[in-house]
Image (cartoon, rainbow, N blue to C red; front, side, top):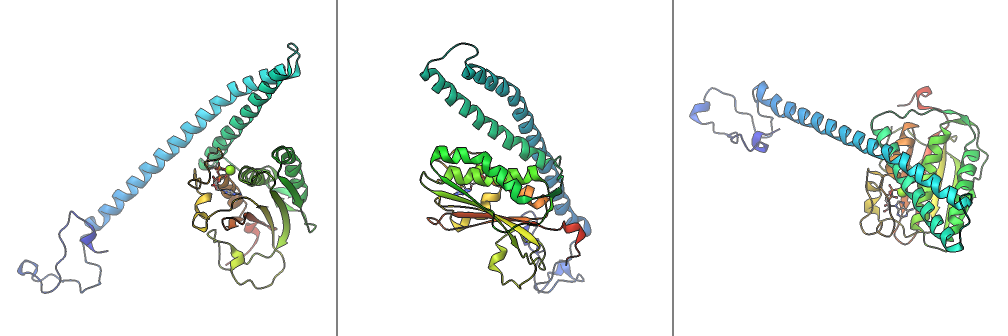
Length: 315
Ligand SMILES: Nc1ncnc2c1ncn2[C@@H]1O[C@H](COP(=O)(O)OP(=O)(O)O)[C@@H](O)[C@H]1O
Ligand SMILES: [Mg+2]
């Protein structure tokens, strides 16, 4: 590295050397100048300390966020309980308008609950307190459960939801609760961003994942030329007829707290759903990505290996 990048240090003279430098070796053009060891170490040490300081600060912020979110849970549960009691009319008969208002309040409690849950899951993932409890299971059954859970919300908005779990999948190891959370986050987005009258498809199929080039979470592996092979993974996809996502945001939507500028204003969100999904899929040894063009809907897919990565000998 040239010390010309350091504003506190004078530029290193090129040839001819000044008389003061006589006897010292002047590095030829392009070669790293020979700085004293202490000088070369100083910026690195400072950077490292700064990096540690920033990491500690981020960790403190994450824990504070989780604590605040956690404290909101109890009063929210109490409010929800009272609303439920009133709605049951055990505390007195209500007129139609009062019931409508309470239902609206209940819906908002649910939204708040989802926000809190996002923050709690995010901070648990950040602080490393989430463990993947993989067990042998049927992914199609897991997807059917998530589908049943989400169907009423889709029907309420007037968006069609289809479960197209095509091929029969063999049993393999995954954490059903974490995968349910991933799929829920994808369905939540499709529901939020797809206008009334649109459609959403949830599907799962066996897939050959060519992993010889190692981990690459930056882009769709499908764009690579694949050699044919036995399916070694399952691909789960949530596709919708929503507005789509500009290609320039295809990486960023998986970053923490990121929401596409402008496009997300019509809906409320934390910008954490896909960041959580990415972490959970990666914790399974899988990968997640989006394929989309504005105006042509979105397809978010993730891959789960049929065999845990630790058992395989990959290059
Ligand atoms: N199916 C989709 N259609 C259009 N935009 C989407 C879709 N899924 C995600 N996005 C974009 O990615 C952003 C990040 O998504 P996410 O992490 O789930 O956060 P949130 O849903 O809280 O905004 C969204 O705000 C939106 O801009
Ligand atoms: Mg979301």
